[in-house]
Structures are given as C-alpha cells and as structure tokens.
Length: 204
Image (tube, rainbow, N blue to C red; front, side, top):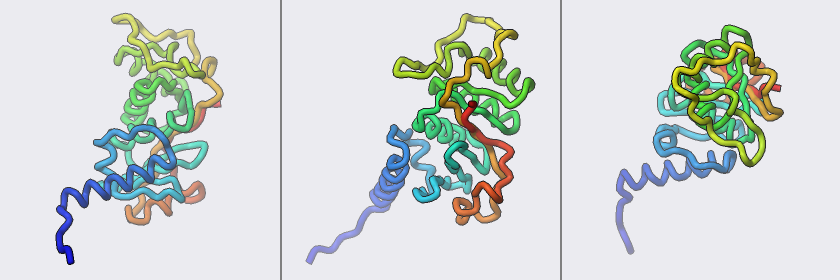
C-alpha cells in the first residue's frame, strides 16, 4: 500500500490547470497566468467565468458582459473577443470601463467603438494618449496586427468616424449589474434579467 499526501501548492496548480483547460475549450488561445490564477470557476455551459473576487464575465454570443469593471475582467473580455474573431468592439459602460477596454482592445489589434460622439471622443483621446493609431486598428484578415505607435503628440482626427471603418466582425462588451450571490452569478447573468449598462458587442 502506498500512502501519501498531495501538497497544497500542487493541488492548487492542478485545479488551476483544470480551469484553464475548461476556458481554452471555449477559446483556444493562450491565457495569461495572472488571469488564470484569479479564476474561481469556469462554467462551460453558460460561457461564464467567476473570479475569486466574485466578478463574473459572461459571453452572451453577440456580446460579452461583466458584473464589475476590473483590470482582469477587462483583459479577459478582450481576450475572449479576440478569440471569437472580432476585429472591433462596441463599448458600453462608465468612463473607467471605456478607457480600460479601449486599451485592452488596442493591445490586441481590435478597434474600440463608442455608442455616441462623447464616448468616441474619449476613445480617440485614450488611444492618442497611449500612442495608438486608431486608423491601424481593427483591420480584418490574417495580416491584422496590433496597433502601431502613432507619432508623438499626434491628435486624433476629427474627420474620422469610427463607424466608417468598423469591420464586419465587431462585437460588444459591457458591464452588468453585480449579482447578490457570486456563487450563482453565472446562472443569474442572462439576457432577460441583467441590467447590462456596460459591455462590449460587435460593431456592425
């Protein structure tokens, strides 16, 4: 008879590996380790991820929503959007969410798009400040690249309208109301009962 114990850190690594494999069964791309270690669980059937802090990210098909705007939830939403083949994202949410999602989309080569002139102005200003050239984002096809640095002190063009250059594969991301019980958050987040005032969706 062999008797032994599984060390705690090995058990944690094993559990983390299971969660990553579940997530990658939905999105076959690399998942940064700092995001993976923050997963509480992954619900494949509802395409939902619950983080340790109770934040939920759910893929609704034509939109991706989150219950809370955090660095990790924003980055995960952008990764999922990219894995789904979206090249541009309509962003709906508060200012912090819009700014964070704009950068996350740009880092992956996707074009961020706002629902109104005020949001688009914030997006353009955020891209310019971070050194991204909006005209080089969201290009469909195998040659699409992450944003290239814009010339220093360049200002966003006031002539360009994001809807004029949005590709076919744009989708939406947003933040939804926080559920009272994070353990049931994945099942609670559905299209009928969620107050989705912050999200990303395709920009068609």
